[in-house]
Length: 392
Ligand code: UD1
Ligand code: UDP
Image 1 (tube, rainbow, N blue to C red):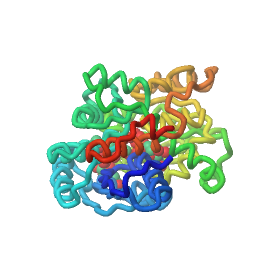
Image 2: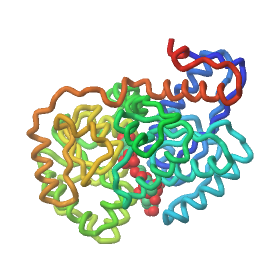
Image 3: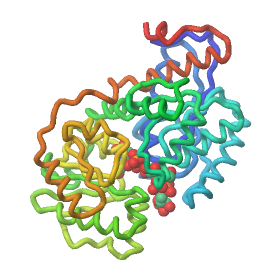
């Protein structure tokens, strides 16, 4: 139900920059458009600031074209670089825009350098920060994402948690105010686009694949790509998995492509391993939903495997998405060839139980927006409906 706000305008600055953030922002963008439409007048102004962390067409623009995300008003064109350098440049450029736009909220997603830079720039200007996908923890501080998440959560005023576990993680760090368990926006996106993807994506026929007769893999995390031994172990295992009766499709992240090229190991011996360019979201959902097994070090893809009810092997030693491990839907394969192959066999064999819907019911983006509107009204002393009133 739309929330009446005395015809006043709420200005949100959405800060995104990397592939998964475009996908996470899409359902919230849609919820904002719907709210504006239903409430007879533009109540919410969503200023999208793209940091430019990802910039290739198939890492950025393709998602704006497919997912109806509000187009960026600003592209800060930060590009690639070392962590500190990239985050520092973003911080300065975001600050400049925030000083000009003066939004009531800054909305950030996930755990990338763009997330931290957005949250920090806003907090320094006393602009309330809303963090979508708050409370996730791997408890591994060697991951750049873990540093980004912990700091962003401690800077945030509104913390939108996808799961019960994430609420608990925040409580364990003393964060209890402004915390809302909303469900996962990636589940909203997946539910919204799955049917369209299955109907319209040409990717299976383009690659000459049949449902359940191929597997899908992605590798891009710093800890997988930047340690030569780990990358070589992962690719040795993948090479053993790819077979004539079950080819392995690998949409290759540019980071991994670059490392493989530098180590001269991009040419693989197994012709049933197809290294392809990153694909758009609809093609990815189509590939995921019809795969036999998914192997990945991606956070988002582990969950999408779970949403699509496809067995998954996580190419890491730990996961933030503990719920996917329950009932044998996801298996931790680590970064050794032998453990990955064992996990792959387990994924092929295991009997999987019913899923308990730990990621919500597909209404996370709607709830996030309503919580922000209620908070905005409180801040501005306008109407004060409680969220319970809004839900009724
Ligand atoms: C970033 C996030 C990671 C997220 C991932 C999603 C951080 C610290 N990491 O990792 O959490 O899972 O995005 O994909 O923010 N490159 C291109 N073209 C592009 C983008 C990147 O060629 O459009 C190459 C560049 O060589 C760059 C490298 O990929 O140096 C890594 O990019 P970067 O944005 O630093 O990190 P990701 O690995 O993409
Ligand atoms: N994705 C995509 N095309 C690809 C690979 C991934 O559209 O070639 C989507 C995928 O479906 C998921 C998101 O990108 O929604 C995951 O992003 P990524 O793996 O880059 O980052 P992570 O989730 O690990 O942060």
